[in-house]
Image 1 (cartoon, rainbow, N blue to C red):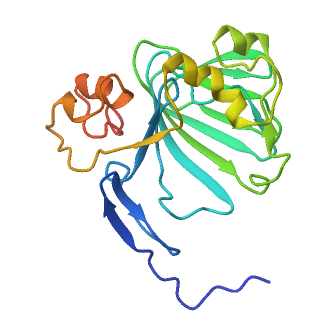
Image 2: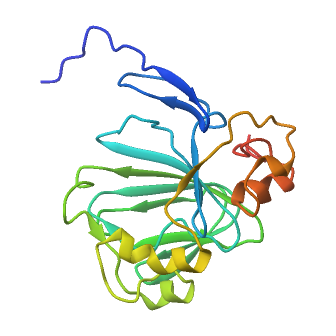
Length: 221
């Protein structure tokens, strides 16, 4: 039977050039505006809420996608995944079908559900993603199947694989991008110009639209 520890200590938060990051075990509070964000061409930006911790049971992040971007290649995982569209319009490709999504739509994907989400409108889309991690380190964690509907949106592999590097090779080649890289948002004030962010990135485009650094709560109450 589980017994609560006497005291759970607070984790340390460190200010880095890429934002505020939790560096150890324990509870903490961090504002998504202030923490570390990553960006990769064609895949948008995501907020790494867990910092340097690695949540063993549950992963959670916030993704911001611009028109033409998808959150992932069409795939399935051995663990449950769930998504909440907070702002904007999106398209869910799930089990070979398409489903339009709008703000506050919730998507539940039981284990082994094949899916991806991409932007459907002419503006940015914000999605909160949550997923189990029981099988995240297993060899059979999941995979990238071939799907004709996903292929029409540029999110299907040509040959089935479970290797992320193989799955994303074509996408990286199209966008001239490598793996997701941290963005130095720290030190960019709310009134900063769009030039405070890498030119052409999701951050840059959204800031030009008048969003606050790093744009998370624009239009959300």
